[in-house]
Length: 256
Image (cartoon, rainbow, N blue to C red; front, side):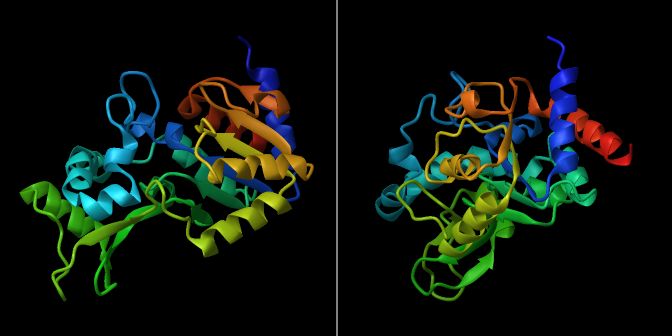
């Protein structure tokens, strides 16, 4: 399939945008070695019931299950490096072609790639909070220690259990971040959705809010989504291959 017309159209949309927003999901980080959630056979939920290991109730009543599930992932998160998709989005921001990046990912790879205006709608592993005294500590050292000794992380102040500052199933999104993300979605006139199946609510409703307020939609994802039919540009391909091409096309057109 010749994707050049699609890339040229998407580049033109970004070039002419007044306020463009990117929305990313797990598919942006899979090329960095971080598994997604729903891919058959390899997704995190392929052989695991998420409610048993990654829900707020599971963490409260069976934290050992949560941390046992997190153990192999923690090492992958720590070792992962930004890929071409992350770098392309950072380039688009640096060029003034994207104003805000909303991500469902918790790995901080967008920040490490150089993006600055990032809204981590599902939280991140950057910090952890004690469930008893509410002390907040740096998250990566906690995970490193856990990977090394497999012991449940405890607060140095009171001995309470430490919870990574990520949003678990059944847990409300952080209101301040959700408010900013909704404001950006409602304000934008172009949204680029990359690497998201758009199945996790309420965050996956943000692109719909943008479209219903008149925004043009560029949708890049290997699988289908509920918004495919409403996309102005639909590219079903690997985001790590397409986003660098989109960034190059948009920058070229901006200087024409």
